[in-house]
Amino acid sequence: MTPSTSPSTRLASWVVDQLVAREMTDAVLCPGSRNAPLSFALAADERVTLHTRIDERTAGFLALGLAKGSHRPVAVVTTSGTAAANLHPAVLEAAHAGVPVVAVTADRPARLRGTGANQTTDQSRLFGDAASFVDLTEPADDALAAAWFPDGPIHLNCQFDDPLLPDADMARSSGRTSPTSVGSQRPDGRFGPRNPTLVGSGDPYPLPPGPRTVVIAGDDAGPPARGLAERAGWPLLAEPSSGSRTGANPIRTYRMLLGTDLGPRIERAVVFGHPTLSRPVAQLLSRKDVEVVSVRARGRWPARPYPVSAEHEAVSATEGNDSTWLQEWRAADRSLSSRIDAFVAKQPGLTPYEVAAAVNAANPPGGLVFLGASNPIRDLDLMATAHPVGERRMVLANRGLAGIDGTVSSAIGAALGRPHSSRAIAYVGDVTFLHDSNALVLGPREARPDLTIVVANDDGGSIFATLEQGKPEHAASYDLLFGTPHGVDLASLCAASRTPHWRVSELTELQHALASPNGGIEVIEAVIRRDNRRELDVAIRALAD
Image (tube, rainbow, N blue to C red; front, side):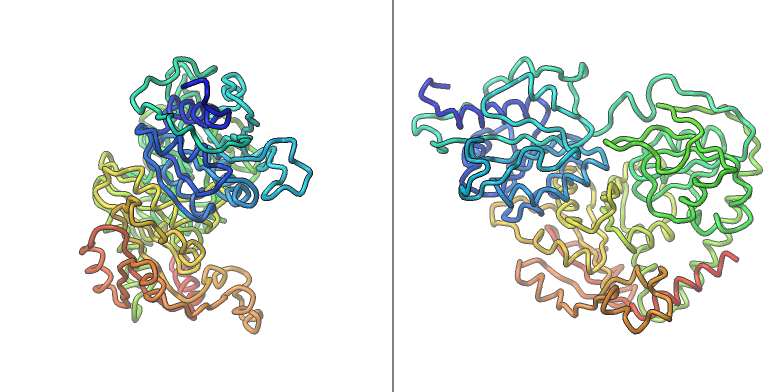
């Protein structure tokens, strides 16, 4: 760089270099004036694929999805003030899920804090302890190295003073070498989302045989959970986004079977990942008569919310345990699954369970499915059979805080971050889709992945119908407080962003639409009922009795 380069331009260029050195290949940018130095630096660097969005909240979740799909850190860059604050939901999700999202926020010089300067607030530690933090006024290798956290979000707050534009004669070389030193960079040089000192590495602790054991695989548990269950011959209770629901050991109807005579006989549970879907699983893990062995989870808060007997970096088990225990679970699972499938097939019209099963069936080897919170992930959890090992399907969800925020953006990001997927599908509810409809607002030059978004539309929040709020005694206030019908015409909403839209109300129509992707981002609206959701849920639960 030439000596005449402004301090703001030098800082911005240094930040980009440092992030590229830490394996960043994608960055998400929201337009602004104060972050102009970063905008020019990113645009001039051919090592970085740049995605531009007008909504900071959407941008944050797009970066989250890109990081999940690519297993690399991804930056999201904003201007100051409320723009930076809008990243908070995505930063919180990244913190609890252990995803390396880098929030790069432009700021006014510190001398303007505490004054009425335009778009100026105190951005120091804006995200609290959810993100590592460094306040930058100039390049500072040691400060960035100390703040770098490869298994969670980092907040780089950059104080930019005028002038904010690069010198006219400055042209950054896209081919120059990256910095040779990045402080305390990990020895293996990788900054993917899985820390090799955690799950599935090191010297595994040998679990003694004997107790009747189940393996519980929560979000992002990964193959170690499946491997342990297979070696030991134990039932595997794996959530859809665990990365473990393959092979012969997953028990499809585990949530319901925990309420049968099998549940009370469990003596030990080995927990991987971040299980959040099921009250029966939470109740099992809180039982005083169950030995809970934890394999340490990722993220900034890996502590379990229930007492654990022991926690290890990795565990192992001997082969050749008594197979009777596993066979009992398999037999019960086959029988209950058959009864559920027969019940669902007899229902008139399209049910949410059929939508979930169709989405699971449409995920081919090498495919990607991104699941929304609330009912979609739970319906797929109930209906999805396990796929064979080695077919490299990826099933993702935002389960760190399990909110509906930014799900469509995250799905788009995951599809962009994993371009080799043979097929990409997002499966969400209508409220989740509406909550992030801004994700469909893409500029004409923006990359559009091949992504089919399946929206199970029952005109409101039907998950509450299956909970205590849905009991008949609360019917008078249910829609106002929980059901929240909206009556939105999704076809018109999609048309506003020129997003192709299908509307289906029968299973055969849904299957045909899933089998005929048009390319790019498209929406399949599967119209289902909400008024009978509690009735269906009660009937299916009764099948386990």
